[in-house]
Image 1: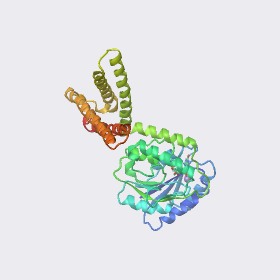
Image 2: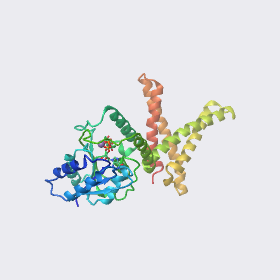
Image 3: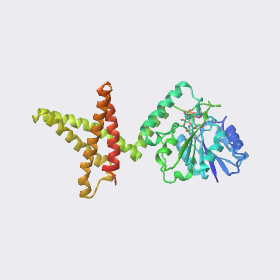
Image 4: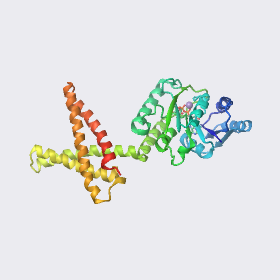
Length: 358
Ligand code: GDD
Ligand code: MN
């Protein structure tokens, strides 16, 4: 079987027949074996209609789950129960135009691992949502793209229309919370190429949206879980949190050195910074890059100096940006802040590539 089209459905009695017809029509000139697999959690009579459809069309199959467990798990079930080498996932309510299927299939056959029809690349449009939903959707997408590195370059990472090569699923443990199965795939699968192509998201043909506040909350939980599961993202956030902790350690040390030990200001400041660096180093060695903790004494001996060198360069970067801001007659705090952000990025990258590399 060359292609499986997986369609989650929940109370879509007016839509399943039409979408099946349009898919069959759009693939009629393609000489390929394909299946249309509905994974249905409906509480209405959709399963009866699906039963009829599967009798009328040999390509149509369906699975009906009695105790519906949501959109994400429905798609995973579809992955497990389908057999096509290429897979396309789409909603059942006709908001995703089936006429795009031949192009997605074509691109998958040409070797792209993951094809994402996008509303937000030139040529695409998001006509199917009202202004409020557009705003909520934009906010959700932006949070996702900032939080997870693998989603940063994907303009439509929260949609439910995409195509993939089955082979990218092999080593991934998919365990989505809620709806955003594409996000789960982007973060957990190993793929070489991912491309977006434009499409127009159209308004719902019939029935109603099942999006809810609970799903928005699930989305945030899902992002948190993905960060924890993804080595590169988890490390970055741990590194930032430890950095913030280090600022606290720095200030408390300074307070103790000046007030209780009576050391001079300059000396106290330098010692406090050094204590904070040791603090950060130990946390990062035992938490952030735990897996890379060095066994041999010799390598460990060089690790702390490396961390110090990276940090000193970071301080240099901060100073440079602060100085640039004041040359440009901008507020120094603005420059210092930009410098801290740049130095954090530098420190993280340099430490992962050098200090804690293999
Ligand atoms: N099996 C199953 N189980 N299917 C479900 C469930 C469920 O619990 N909940 C929803 N679905 C199906 C619907 O029948 C529909 O085919 C599809 O999933 C999307 O649900 P809609 O209710 O139509 O959601 P939407 O249009 O508001 O959201 C869609 O567009 C968004 C774009 O902003 C989805 O594709 C979202 O993933 C997408 O982000
Ligand atoms: Mn919809």
